[in-house]
Length: 344
Image (tube, rainbow, N blue to C red; front, side, top):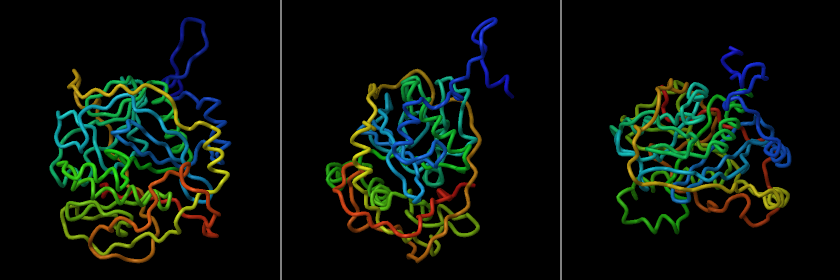
């Protein structure tokens, strides 16, 4: 095992760690500490196609997720809109869960992890494709490609979270930052109905700073609910009576905003998105499916339909929101252990 993790730099030289085992850079560890986080705390990833940005959020002791860094996506192929079929070169949009078995330390694209496309929603709509990744090399034909250095850092953040006990982390891929104003711009787009369905997940996280659980039934996403005890929901069947998460809205404090302003958490880098078809296939080698995590504890109930966009949801990030007094609940918010998606 140890031999597999090391690559000899040359005869008589010291062994060198492979890219997937590189430690987090010192400046990254310093930023983690300054933001009141730990290297192994849970992560949550958001992708915004139009902006070509990938955000990493990390949990703190209160159970909320705080912005860590925004990374430039070096390249993604296709257009705005979800992936429909294998070979269309579209990068996926929607809700995906990444478990340890989806990590690809031996990727030919430096390092990579498999998004898990198609998920339950994709399969219910007969969408096809496989091996869709977040990886390095800045080349994409259906994946989200980063520079090698940034892919390595994101991979390391995921690796440390898994080693510290996170079962899976959510990757929510959006066409753009889903403010009301931006969505109105695309009201005539063919993907508008799909985007209005996934927007509540964006609003939910902006309101609560906790990734929503996601279920699929009646061939649609249902946001912010817990799966039944069995962990099974028929993606094409009638929606059961779900439980809904009841959380206190998140209010950023002055210290968090000052740290964000001082540390420069938007990473500079290359953005060179190409819409032309490239020479390789949708992905790489097969990866095992993620294992479903147990459902999160929730309270309350809703009817058999997706919740509407939450009233009063903020569309500002924690760094942009106006300063208010902290009104967090006395008890820590429980970090969700279930990401939904009706995983087998």
